[in-house]
Image (cartoon, rainbow, N blue to C red; front, side):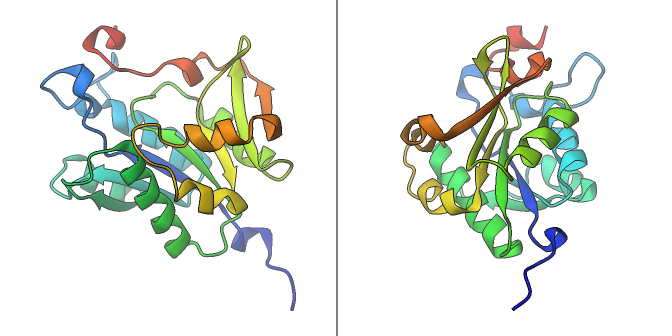
Length: 199
């Protein structure tokens, strides 16, 4: 059997936009405009899909105003049910969706919709480094950040995560194997949890 061409073994982007953003207050933080007027989640989405054209977005309910906009950007969009309240639920839904849509995926780069300042070039570099390691994480000034890349053989472990820890448990279990690289992208550390973080 001939090996698949690289184009048939894509690294897939996974945008997690299904959280409740409880610390932000009554408003949906993912729909908050940044200084230039662009919505937070759409800025994060744009960087991801520019780097990884094969991308999946997990949102909370198809009635979300984000659904149509993400689809028009090229995302495969899947909605988390209301009863799925924890981060692990949307992560697992995203992983299963990515595996279903892209059965030959070589890896997954997991990005968070509340981290809108990550540069496309950083995401591209994470994906590229997945050819060398099972786990890839960017660093800025010595601090590890997002997004994190996972090789396809770690997908079964991602599907076992529970609670609000997301993929952190998998990172902890494989600390010694993580390939980290230093970058000049301060956005890898800047998530937006409260209205004050928007300033």
